[in-house]
Length: 461
Image (cartoon, rainbow, N blue to C red; front, side, top):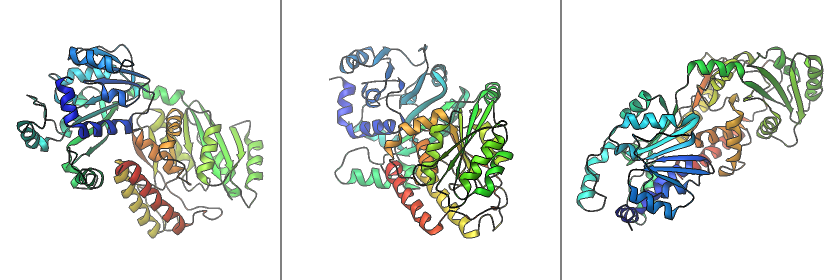
């Protein structure tokens, strides 16, 4: 057993926690590169389709190859490594603390990135420097000289200099040693809490390639779009969904999913399809089950566009504003666009004061649980690429079928994949036809239940 393996066994709970962090964000069967692969345990733990690791320690690489023959492990220094392919994920578990030339290493990391690549880094909270030095003196930690003690600001700046932007960050682990009872109390229940979280040992950052402006404009022009319109008892709004729809990208299709209406919504959908079928690509279907969530998934299954948009058929969100959502996602400036109704002035008719306060509360709570700033969690307009939707759907088993609305299933899935989530301001109008299908008290309880579920699956896992 090598010296590094011995220290791993001595502090196994710490290393297992690092592995759990990466397993949460890295989707299995992806192409993964690890910079500073060490013993190979972390790279192997994320079950890559193709796993490539580089490390400057030739003996460690040789031993790791024997232990994990399915991995491709190379003797390379991060500052010298020249990748010949691109990866879905690039992992740097505390590696940045040991590098002689961080910028040069990150430049090489940048070369291994495609637009969707996620670079995930972990590093020690600088506030722990004295504690870790003491642990080294007490022979509880592997002795290492001349570490880079970097703050989050340092990390963000170094990434930015090499064309990478931070899209997510967090902290975890208060107690690295597995002391019975205390270990779970400190790390599972106390570490995620506000203020206390700032004291955690492990900091992590998720980054991606910065958007190229010229490429962004080309993507906007060449992308196709599918607008999913769930409709239940909205006969008076159906025609306006088409006449007010902007042309989005190279081709726009509109998909109506009628959901067990008691008025003539289905007949109106068929009439509108016949009337505008030569001007617009309109697809229609009746919902097989119940609930907006099921309607959204049925519509997404029918969609052929590169960008997928949800538009509520009550038209309280203006169809004209969809262009901002489409361009944000198609350009690559964000990967999940979330409608925000709380930027422009709101009338009490559009959103009563009590609803506004409840919305702000849920937005705050979900922002905390998802580690992502969200100002309006309850707007039904959500937009993402078809590629990312398929990844969320593939990963849906992690959360299960918990969401009757269809919005939170996407939001939670996007957070787990480390997608860049941005709020897009919308003008929110009072409905002009029919009445809301929302039962506020009942659905408020459902929202609380979903937040508790998110706490268990994301924050306090």
